[in-house]
Image 1 (cartoon, rainbow, N blue to C red):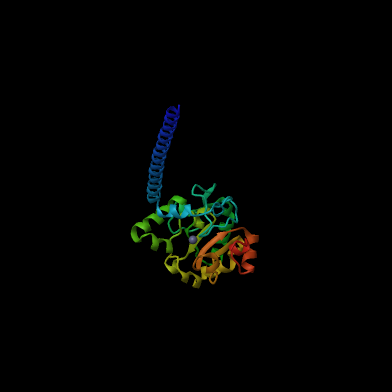
Image 2 (cartoon, rainbow, N blue to C red; image 1 turned 90 degrees about the vertical axis):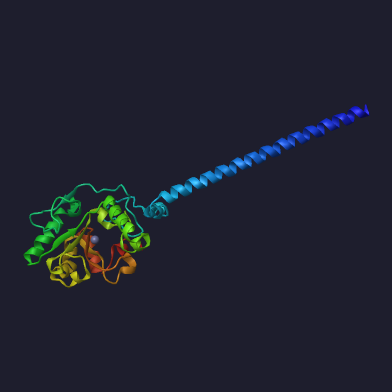
Length: 261
Ligand SMILES: [Zn+2]
């Protein structure tokens, strides 16, 4: 009787050992598998990350509200931190009055296009400036996301990412993608986009009159901290005459007007 009791205890102990042993082994196995999976996962996402271009990494770091939800708005604020969606293309892009307005690179080209809302005000502005004896040329208007990416990538290849980011807009951050802005130039500055445009009769006239047609000088002198851009006396943005006049009268910027600083 006593012997058989011990026998049972022995069997139970043995069973316990086996069960514990198995569980331990299974646990170890499971742990190993988890570790392997984690490692594989990590490796995979590392590879995926490495494969991304530099600007994709930057865009990943953006929060959703920095990608504009109303890119079509006439007062859409696009700057170095507020991106247009990469698939955003404005509708009704058109080349305005090529028989009247001079284009530095003539033709039905992307760079000469603006949104159709600008058709009348742009033609009126240029016609009036010509009547005043001035010679204003359109150097560059609409710029697609693809074109911005091309320019950015080419610069990265040539001088590296760190140098590129200082001087070239990340794809999606160029206001030119809105189809609402234009870089103007004139013959006396060799059709370049340089600060000395401010000294020309054309630059001065645009500075003082563009708001009447709905355009603001988007990157004024002394507002670099607010706009995030150096002074660009040649870059004008359409916002409509009322808002442009308000911004002009208050010596303000689109950032200040929208109170998004
Ligand atoms: Zn510009």
